[in-house]
Length: 114
Image (tube, rainbow, N blue to C red; front, side, top):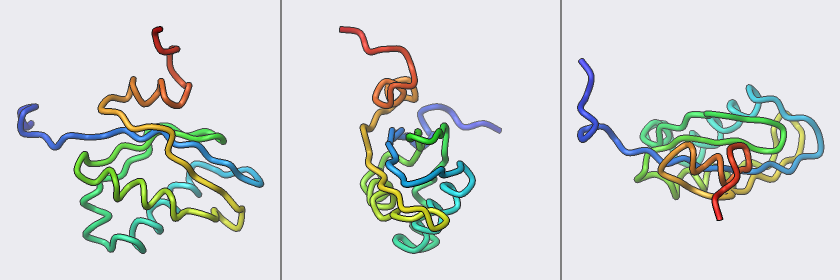
């Protein structure tokens, strides 16, 4: 049975960018994200964040998280500095309550209206 929209947990979408010395694959980045979340927040804290990678390319992507855990998710992203031995810097470009808004931050969707 599905929950009513009013009973569902609210989500936030974080658009992030990556600066790296080499190529970083989606799978390797997700593994490092999970490892970093578990290390920083513990198993319970990382599960409460509800992290899910929605889109990813070599320059950045969009992550979904729980609305109440946005600051924790930003901290997890900030602690990632290596992915499979490749040095990386991850920075959050913006946060939105919708995927469309996050795509506007990251430049993956339609251009924002003036």
